Length: 323
Image (cartoon, rainbow, N blue to C red; front, side, top):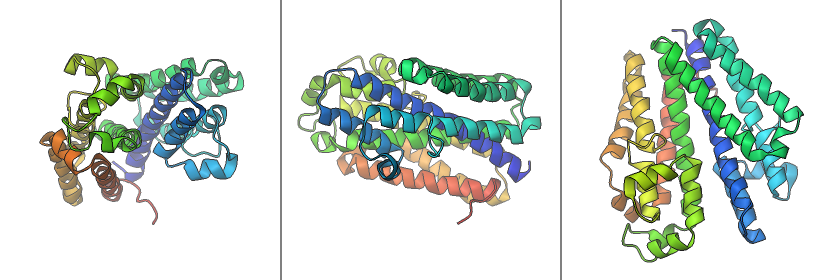
C-alpha cells in the first residue's frame, strides 16, 4: 500500500475517534453543569476540558473568560480550533475523499453524510437548542463509522490502518482524561486501595467519578465488574488495566499491536517492539503499584510512549510529519 493512502486512512480514523471523544467530554461537562454547584467548581470543569485537549492557551488568547457557552462553541463549531468537532469531522471526510477508491461505498457515504448533516445542524442551531442530543448524534455517527468499516471492508491493510488510527487516538484520549480528572485528587488515594480517605471521598463525590465513567461509557461496565461503591482506585484499574473494557488503555493497546502485526514490514521491527512492550506493561501491571508510584507520573509517561509510537508508525508506514 502507498504510504500516502495509509496516511489518509490512519488519520481519517483518528479524526473520527477524536470527534467522538470530544463529544463525550463535552456531554459529561454539560450534564454536570445542570447540577447544583458553585461557580468555581463549574469553571474548573470547563477549564479541565480545555486542559485535556491542550487548548487552554489558545482559548484564553482568543476568548478570555471561560464560560460554558464559549467553551462549547469553541469545541463544537470553531473553524479556527483544529480540535473542534467541526474540524475533526471535516478532516475525517477529506481524508476519506482522498482514498475514496480504497473504501467501500458505505464507508464513504457515512463519512460524507456525517459532515453534511453536521453542517446543517450547526446552521439550524441544533447544538444550542439541545447540546446533549447533539453530542449523542456525534457519538452515534462515530459508532456507525466503525461499524460500517468492520461490516463492509475487506480486512486487508487498509482496514488495519483504520483500526490502528482509531485505537491509538482512543488510548491517547483515555489517558488524558484520566490524568486531568485524577490529578487534582491523586494525593487522597496515593498509595493504592488502602490510601486514606479514598472510599469516603468517592461516596461524597459520587457524581464526579460516575461522570468520568460515563464519559467513556464505563458506568454500567463498572457496576457489572465491581458491584460496589465507586472507588477511585477501581475506576483507574478499569480504565487502565482491564482488557475487557473497550476504552481502557489495555484494550486499546491490544488492538494497536494486533493490527500493527498485520502490516509489519522490515523497517517496523522497533515500532512493533515498542508497542508490544507497552501492551505487556498494561497486561501484567497492577493498580496498587501504579498508584504507589503516582498516577500522574504513570499517565504522563504513557502519553509520551504513545507519542513516540505514533512517530514510529508515521516513520515506518505513513507520510512522515515534518519536524
